[in-house]
Length: 208
Length: 175
Image 1 (spheres, each protein chain N blue to C red):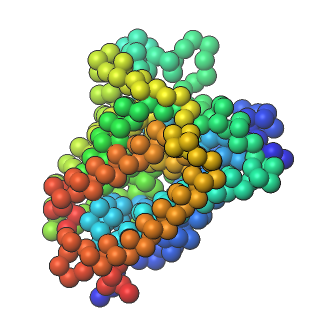
Image 2: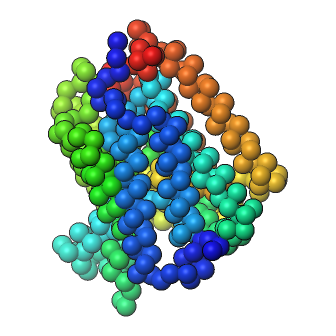
């Protein structure tokens, strides 16, 4: 059957909630098995101690990216439906500012939203406090919304993709991203040996 | 020397990454959308606030779209169910690996008070950030990244660029 199944009406709203629950189950399971329940593992990347976050994220991103393209070549996935109805819209300025705030939150708080949830069920108290802080952050955003609502929807470029930005074929863009990921994996190994914050070398290096 | 105990016993990062990628691919194939987490926090925060001050929340420009008359309950949403799944899946993974351990993740010389204060501050910043960016590491960076959405890549670069640049200033809580 050609995906995305829900957008083609293959199953209804009620089933979609169950599908999301099951997808979330696998998501949470894999996040835990990746070691992403611990704030130290998550932030070690920023000190070049252990580049696990980069390895997991980029291999996940490229797996799904290539998988979607292969499925569409096989006729099992209609990429045009995704582009027309489901691709995340670009709001350039708020996404950059949101990214800066989120990056600060990540290195200061030690978590991002999904990983804090896995941290909580692993018993991490700092994860509970982080998620509590997120609630406060959302109330702050809601309270100040009249002030920044115009900015929050500025820079809207619609459903824009990278291959459209660079004006190259989609498969070439994907190949470039895969090449970039492979280069990043190689550089990650070098960065762990460098480990500028630790005089005796990184934990990852000591492990081997 | 060995890896610190908090980093032991996990999957090879590339294996974990491919597994995570397959979960993301499954989500796109079935639903047409990727993974997400922060949207559920917004909806839960809205429902909690609504139980305390319903009128204020219904008049709030940001929250009011969740409480349209005749609309579905804010928690009857795919992202809320996904997050329930995250908690369940994470818990099953923790239990089966016998890794449940109440503790505060922090560097060897950092105090608990410092770490928890910064966890709170970081949570606030992250919460505000997700609302400007319309998503987080899962909804924007992973899901938007895999579909090559331009804004998601801008978000991802901003997140990691900022975190690398700011890491120096909070190194004491992690070293």
